[in-house]
Image 1 (cartoon, rainbow, N blue to C red):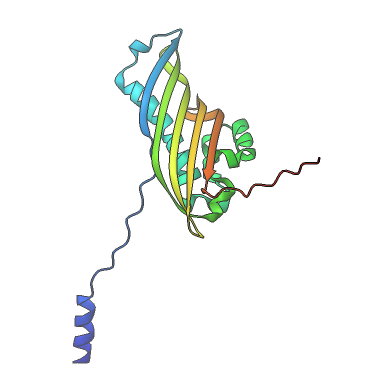
Image 2 (cartoon, rainbow, N blue to C red; image 1 turned 30 degrees about the horizontal axis):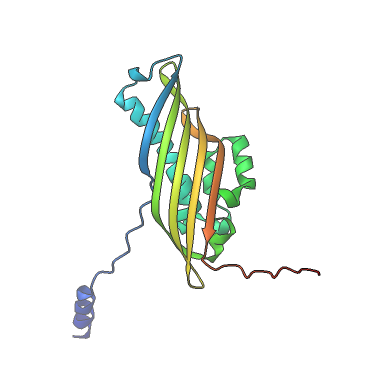
Length: 195
């Protein structure tokens, strides 16, 4: 009788539900332009245009996902998965500019970051009938929850220069600007004047 109740109770236990993994961050697509040097952008097929755009989207979506959105990828502020999308010389510079390209040291104080708005516009430079370079402009806004309470407003804009290297889009240069604002104003230091 005891074994029957044990097995019966085991069968009736509600199944445990696992939380669905969060989807990686993805920018909203802004405008896409194709400019030609020695070829004609008009001759590109829709599939070629989509393949080029999708390749750049993958790179920048992943850079921002790893650098700002998905906490498990922050690696306690190391952000190593960001660098896979940079060509070697740019990756070395990116390691020096980590605080400008990602949450930087603030990642240690954050519980989570929720994207509010992200737009990615891309202009491609073509040689003959192939896109060979791109300029991607990002606009990213998010809200972070601080571990000690409160919020952190995240604003980041970037201009990324990409080249098609060995069949993959790689960042070869960038200009970025961002702010992380917890809304706590710094205590002003009184100015000292002498008569």
